Length: 593
Image 1: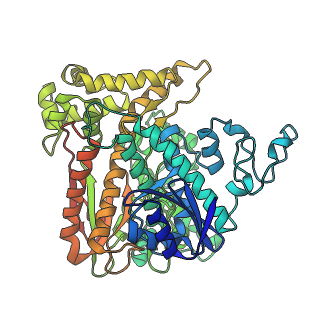
Image 2: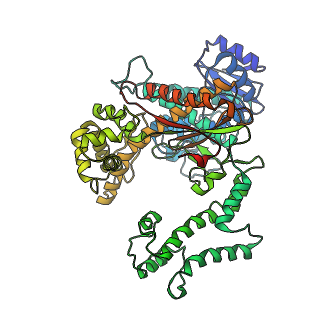
């Protein structure tokens, strides 16, 4: 039964009466001009917008807010500058438990209820084979008699606070089931007093989805004039029309073509023609990837010019004036859409080129007046993660210092570069090459780590899913049918790397969430990263970039180190593995070493 409450203050009283205290799950949804909340098996329709309810209830009770997905519910909260310290994102936890990227409410509900997700009804769907009797029932109930969610609930905005209350109650129901499933995953190496790692992962994955919205709202500070000048250096002046754009393109091409014999005409954007041209110059290469050609730099002027052309062409076409106009706002902030994880091993992703910004353009990422960047980069994170997830005591001992590869080299009786190549090759599935002898030595020196990797590879080859240390399911492809040996080998390499890279992504997001919480404590507020505020402005694989007032740079650097120590104590509890971060204070991003 849904009860109606008049305003956010009444919501505080109702939740107090329901026994809500710090950390208690409380679900929230938006409906019409009001909200729906649910806790302890009860739900209420509130005549106040979610931002008001979450702000008032949060300051009074500090619950863990539950929603179907941050993208659906939390976006207006972020826009209103509401701080949400703790949340549970049902969609994010669904992806953790079941893998993949499908997380629409109807799909999440169907999987949780053991229904066929392929038969989820959709708005406007006409299916002559569907049993129409199953669609009858109370239209005010979000769940149909056949167990599926009604499309008008799952796909459309909720119209009333009463609808929002029922929707919040369903989210809370799923949250309880997800939490129970995650709590059953135990690791005997972890201290019994700590929550299961899978639950901690669910918390940080949920926080990452909220952080993704905050990153999109905050943006990355950019000196627009400097960026335009850098683009001009590669692409020429801003073209006034299509004819000028074509002339600029032809001028870039001519720098390469003029160095070819007899003015040879080659389409530089056609890999087959470029490869044939290189063969005529004496370079027989299997493909024309830049990393393949780099070792030949200096061997022929045309090859040097081609590599330079590619860098300029990428900036002209992908990061040119159009990119600048589309993604950098009047406030000088570069913005794109962020996601808390990809559909594979779980790394954060971003649009607008935020994850692939060319090094040439990083010098245009400049802190605003009175501010600096504080950058932190996890050092040698993947081999340290391997030590933790595999329980290899020898490899864990190698993490004691700032440089992991030197003690590994000593153990393998080789030089440091060979040791580094061997460790990375082992994680990426390479079994031979220049560091082949060192690779074989890894089996003797670190048997548990190598056995962990081999086990993942064998599962991948066989088409069996793997799970990361934090509990993320990573599905394999081509299951249920005979596959070529090359496909099985590719699956094995993918699985071998996914259990390390996926775990590293989970560690990174737990660290980012801990830093985010620490920033709230230091500033007393979060928001769009304006003047006087500290804010995370970039999450790049293993790197965090924060934009902070210059006077607080030292405190922020300390926070980054302390947050990593706290994260490692939770994430790698009992492993003896040490994680390190290189932290620096910079006026511009390109100053990072």
